[in-house]
Every structure is written in C-alpha cells, then in structure tokens.
Image 1 (cartoon, rainbow, N blue to C red):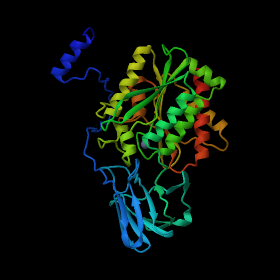
Image 2 (cartoon, protein in one colour):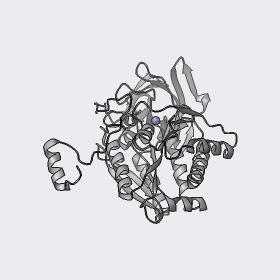
Image 3 (cartoon, helix red, strand yellow):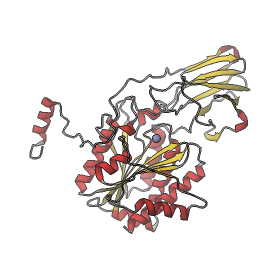
Length: 409
Ligand SMILES: [Zn+2]
C-alpha cells in the first residue's frame, strides 16, 4: 500500500472492507478461532433470603454471583457460572453479603458440572482484605462451604482481591503524576463495551531509536496476583534509582496495565466481552483489545525507528512459574533469560526459578514476541495464593535485574 495517500487508502477500505491500520498477522502452528462468541451477562441484583434476613449482592464492578438460594436457616447456595464455555477451570466469584442481625452463616459454592473450586476466599471489610482462615473452609468431596460472621455492614467475599478498571486507573494515574517527567498516559483505543484501553509510555528525553520493552497484564480477569507483580515491577522501574535513570535514558517501556477491562469489570473467569481468551488472539487480532494494543506497539516501533527486544506478560496460575520460548539464539537478547534467572536466584533469598520452556504453538503474546519480532517473550506467572509480600519482592528484584542486564547488553 506504499504510495497511497491516507484518503485514497480509506476509500479502498470502504470499498474492499480492508482495515488499513490492521497490523500484520503472525503465523502460529496451531491457529485458534478467536472470532467473537456470545457471553451470558449476570443479572445484577441484591438477593434477599427473607426469613433468615441475609442479603447478597453483585451490584458492583468485578462482581460474579449468578444465584443465591437458601439451603437451610444457616446456609445459602452460591451459584457461580462462567461467561461462556468452553473455558478453563478458573471459577471466579465475588459478591457482598450482610445480615439484618449479626450471625454466623454458611455459604456453599455451586459451579456447573466439570468445574471445581479453585480460589481461597478473600474477605474485605472496612477497606481491608484478608484471606479467609482455613478453619472456616469446609470441603465435602469437591464441594466447598465457608463460614462467615455476617453483620449489617456488607463484606465482600471474592476469589481474588478486587482490582476493577477504575481501581487500576487510580493506581496508574497516581504513578504517572509522581513521575510526570517520564510517564505519559495514553490510550490504545476502546473496548467493545467502550472502556478505555490505557497504556503508559515511559522514557527519559526522546523516544527516537530507543529499543522497546512491552509489559502487559490482566488479559485474564481474575489474575490479580500477576497484576500485583506488574505493579511492583513498574514501580521499581520508576523508583528514581541510578539504574532506573540510566535505563530510562536508553530504553522505552510501554505498559498496558489492564488488557481486558470489560472482562475485569464483568467479573469474568477468563474471557473478554467477545467471549474469547485474548491470549490466543495474537495472530490475526479478531478482538479489538489485541488489535489495538498491537497497532499501538507497531506504530511506536515505526515512529521511533526502534526494535522490540522484550515482552513480559504478567498472569497468575496455581504456582509461580515463568513460561519461556525455547528459541533464543536468534532473538535480540539470546542470553537474557539465563542471565535474568541466575540473577533472580542470587538476589531473592531461598528462591528457585521455576521455568517451563516451549515455543508457543498457539497465538499467545509470548509467541507473538518471538514469531513477530524475534524478541524475548515471557509469560510471568505468579501463584494464585503467593503472599503479597513475596510478590512485592519478586516484582522489585526482577525489575532491577532486568534493567541491569539490558543495560550491559
Ligand atoms: Zn493468564
């Protein structure tokens, strides 16, 4: 299309329904159908168990509660269903509950056939999150019941701490204000439900010819522990240390703090509002979130005449693990992974890196970094129940060591 003016190009797009701004697709061995599928929206309401005086509500962002029924005077059935199927076993739940009179009350979780309870409940009362003590969790085969002391003030019971799109915005806005000489808040576009797809552009001086590092998180809504590592990682890059100063003078970071804001606010188990796992869409970009993020990255590279050297995508799973690509010799930093992991083990007490290495057959962000840009791509996974203090340390040390290694490359 070189030589065609924008006007003419758009005329052709109109006729041929070709999107001139669509980024180049990247080929994967095992393609995945990521065209949009219907999702089930939960009915937003406050349930009342009239004769026991107990209430439950999903009327807030990030909630998931599909039904609430009385089993007996001291127990309710909590019905949780996913946005659509097939879907991974990540049954996310989040609701508020309270009672007319303070009393102990039991909640039994019910998921559709084939899904099992995964997340230990987190409880929020008076803006303070705690993990529910194991003495209040009862298992009967795979059926889980929890016990809570209800009061007339609502408590939130959730699979993971809630970090809605507006919570994320609060965090990055504060971070950007505190670092306004190096951080610019931008937008890659809008989601299908008209939420912003924010992006932070971070560097010192001019962005021209600075090699690029891409950070991503929250493709999968419940993966909040991965988001906490992303926060700690980015805060460390912006901590004003000597390494950070040198790093930002030489490199450019673009960070997407919430890749699936629709899914996050809708309380999804895994998918976006198009009913799709966006981390299988990094090939032909059927979903607007990925299409716009990729366009933003490609535009940045072109404008700055720079190359993409590293992509880190922060997620959560059962335990801490790094998913890496097997092919490294031809990437821009063939020794990065080995050096980084060695540095993490040397700098985090009693820590052993858990790595699983394979080239992505399916269209993930990690595979896109490699197949699309010969960049190092890593899925940075934090365990569902890794303590916050540990996440803070992983995020900090991994950012420090990444900066040091890249500065000496
Ligand atoms: Zn994930």
